[in-house]
Length: 504
Ligand code: FAD
Image (cartoon, rainbow, N blue to C red; front, side):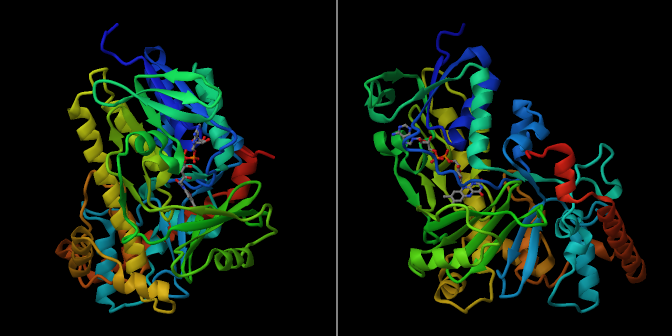
């Protein structure tokens, strides 16, 4: 046994972040570490994170869980993308579908051929990009299937994520983690004890007097940030200048048919409303900026737009967009809402739990807590947060909406970073979509939001000129037909669930 190896890991918080951390660390480290998770039923969890992105499959694979069992246990459904209503302009509708549209040809991304054809025909306005996307076509047709082993021929894969009930997800992970030996302690943390040599946390004290000691602490205590902020005073970068939404109201309602395989994000007067279909209910919320609408008004709007009968009282939530100055400080690593929050527009929060957990595993410290791994962890996490922020800001700023003070503020006053401006210029001047390995959102995601929100490219790669006009048109027609035929062979989303993972 390495004498400087960390043995005792304490996780504070049993929401999605806490149980994801417990399950992941227990799976990877096994007997090498002892994990204690402290949570307070009285305080409860935020319980609203219910839409994910396809990267969650990597986490599921890490745990080795059976996907059907997981969907069944969480009343889950499948997600092929996010449909955006009324963002670029009122009446607009587009999807940020997971998966590439079209088929690559000669090493050049498909969108350059699509752009060349569109430019040659002098087309502006309503784009048909999504006729080439299997994810988009399947989503709008309410169909779903997993990609067969051989793929969907030249169309490749149909990536997907999940919608799930957040409380059931935490319960599912808890059962998994406890099977691997994680010790759960019920109780409210009331005190945090600092120690030598640098004021790092040595123990936490619960309301009933019990003291829990540890070497590494994982702060998953939600917005409170009990250890990272309450004890270590790490500081918070306020990003509300970029992402002004600061509140949400959430309410579940009865399900309606069809069970759509996508999340919906509908722009509204002072923010946007989410719709997340689960097997047993639909999750709804209005994310808004309190400078432009009151909580009562936002609640009334949300209730008036529900598909079915409300199943609970509307629940208000407050937040400040931004992130901790250091997500890992001393011997405390914050995960989930304790580390920051960028609002749920692209369902990135659960992913950030997963990716920071992944980094923690990669840079796992020993008792010496050297600076280098911590600094590297923080630099990587910061870069990921900032890149996601740029992508979210694009949704708010690439708009022609000026119908409310909120949208005028977004269009005219939200700052665009230099990197965001450069991306937009690269797109506009030649359809270029830079690839940065570290970015969560790849060119395909930028493509769909840029096109969907009406930012036209004035050119495309000269390499797209290698194919004659007539041949290009015929080839594009073939791709469209292939997408439509493949879509028509897929089962309905609800039928797929009924056959494989129904919780009924
Ligand atoms: P919480 O769920 O708040 O858990 C905190 C835990 O700490 C609880 O167990 C609590 O009991 C415990 N705790 C706190 N204080 C104490 C104490 N003193 N003693 C003991 N225990 C304590 N993410 C997505 O990926 N997709 C989405 O669609 C999405 N939608 C969202 C919508 C909204 C409006 C909001 C606000 C967030 C959304 N998120 C979404 C984010 C997502 O909800 C969170 O990332 C995720 O739930 C993780 O939360 P958490 O575990 O960090 O915090």
